[in-house]
Image (cartoon, rainbow, N blue to C red; front, side):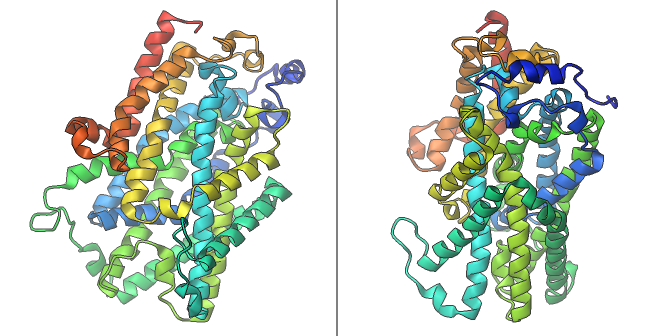
Length: 498
């Protein structure tokens, strides 16, 4: 396991496949000479990505939903331990063969069918790109509104439901992201190096303020759960816990699929496994605790639950504090956005037409779709954030993960042919480039969660769907993953070439 994951014939393979329309430099196998990421690199990657405002908001939303501090932290930690498993498993092929996520998908979905998981993953990334851009723009808007109160008095724009100043700040921060993408991914390296310490420092300062203003951690951590006896939601803990756990898994369900985009640079399998295990769960738990503690403190200090850290920061009136906080938030959010939400979708969009779509073009498409998705509505309230956004897309990504892992570890025994992955007429052509087996497994696995999703988003009334089928949606990622895993292997045994 600790030996370098080299592919002896990788240089020859690249020469052979360069004439294929399925090839471009971004999708090519990474040669052994460029696989230099060690354990520290993967740990740093996850520390940088996990220490972000959405992590804080994720934890805080559980408090807003009724959990006490230890229930929220335990739910988040457990969810991240669960998602770490497919994360490490899907990373294996990237490390062994040096291939990115869209190319890995060709083994199970077909050379053309791989566009389905790649596009679904890309569209989710567009949503996250929009959310991060909204968070950066919102920070600018709310802090500017402290200095210029008139900005906060504008009427909401039709359809958008936000005022002109909010939309302008969002577009301004979005434009900065587009500028960085246009300059190339190397521009973000300096920001990534200072991003994690910046946001951790800001979080720890907020934690210190919460401890001081609320009279110590005693009052903060003694806030009862709304699910305890005599509380407003007594007896409802499990009905909230399971969908919340699914949401926690869904939070990183995107990266659990496209982790080969990063693990293809790993020196050994041990590096990616240990690095991810050290970097992901503990960072999420730490930053989540900061969010939980500060949010709990706001109920004591302001007599209301404030789950957005930007709203908490605007309660401070010191101009120096506000400006420093705004700059720190913007730099940190920008760095996270480019690293987590541009690299992968740019590769995914490039997979549609490798010879025509570049990284820059893919990044621009990501940004434009991020606007159209109106991300401010996705994070408008804790319930929508978890039950609609996180669980909703986990219903799509869980089945993809189940199919990929079943194909690679069980059906193929971790053996892939690099040439075949880039050969439009090779073994992964299946039926005109599409694996019918994978397609059927995906549809069958998504179907059980669809009624519950339609009820959740109020497309159909709850009374028209049997109760157990509605609640099945609460377990969307787990159901989708398990069903897809079993159905794919059964169908693949019946139709190995389909």
